[in-house]
Amino acid sequence: MNRFLRPLALASLALTCTLALTLAGSATPALAQAQKADFPTMLDKGGSVLVTIKYILEAEGQEQENEVTGSLISADGLVLASNFFFGGGPGGANATPKQIKILHADDTVGIDAKFIARDTELGLAWLKVNSAPATPFPFVDFSKHAQATVGEELFAVRKLGKFFGQAFSIAEGRIASVVTKPRTLMIPTIGLATRSEIALPLYNTAGQVVGINTYILPDEDEMAGGSDALKGAEYGMILPAKDVVEATAKALENAANTPAPTEAPMPMDAPAPAPAPAEGQPK
Image (cartoon, rainbow, N blue to C red; front, side):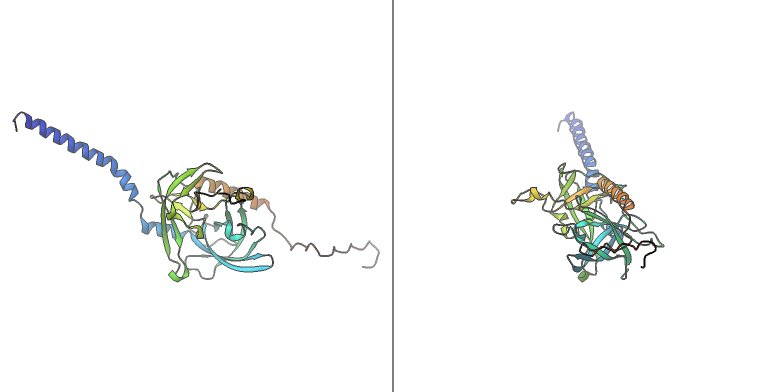
C-alpha cells in the first residue's frame, strides 16, 4: 500500500471500530434490561406476598369449598383476589363467601378473615384478616409502581398445585397491546395466560409492579348474539397499578361506611312480629 494512503486506511479502520463500539455500547443498556430479571429474587419476593384463601361459597342453598390464590397488599393483612372466585362471575351474583381462612407461607391452619368489598366491573375482591399478625406481613405496594409499554416483558409469580408442593413458579410474557376502551388496559401475550389464577401482580424486569391481571366482561347486551366483544383478549387483561390503588381506596372507603350486620335478616316469608301490648294490658 502507498505509504501516504496507509495512515488514512488505519485512521478509517480506527473510526469504524470506534463507531461499532459506540453502537454496541448504546445497545448494551437495552440488552441488559432484557436480561436483567433476577428469577430467584423474583420468586422469593413475589412468592412472599401470595396467600392461599380457603372458604365456602354459598349459593342457592348449596355450599362449595374453594381454595384460590390472593395477594397481600398491606402489612396488616389486606388481601386482593379475583371477584370471579367469590360469586362475581356470570351467574354468581347471589353467592356469599363464608368461613374464610388466609394461609401464608408455611401456615397450614389459617387466619380467620372476612370478605370486605368487591368491584364487579374490575373483577376484583378484597378480604382482610380479623386480627393483624404480631409480625407485619410482606406485601406488594401498588403505590410504588412503574408504567409499562407495548412489547415490554412482564412476569407473574404464581403457586403451583398441591401435587408440586405449591411451589412458586414464574410466568412470563409481553404486552401485546394497550387499549383505552372500555378503560386503559394492557393486553398480554399467551405467556401470561394465567386465567386460572387471575388477580396476580405483574412485574417488570426490574421487579417493579406494573399492574394486576384480571378479566373484565362486557355487559349482557354486548355479549348477546355471539358477539365478538372479547376478540383479541383471549388471555385476560392487565389493569394498571394506579387503577388498583384507586379501586382499593374506594373499596376501603365503602367498607368503612357500610355497617356490619348485627343480626340475621328476617326471611321474606316469615310472619311479622306481634305488636307489643299496650301499657296496663296483660303480656
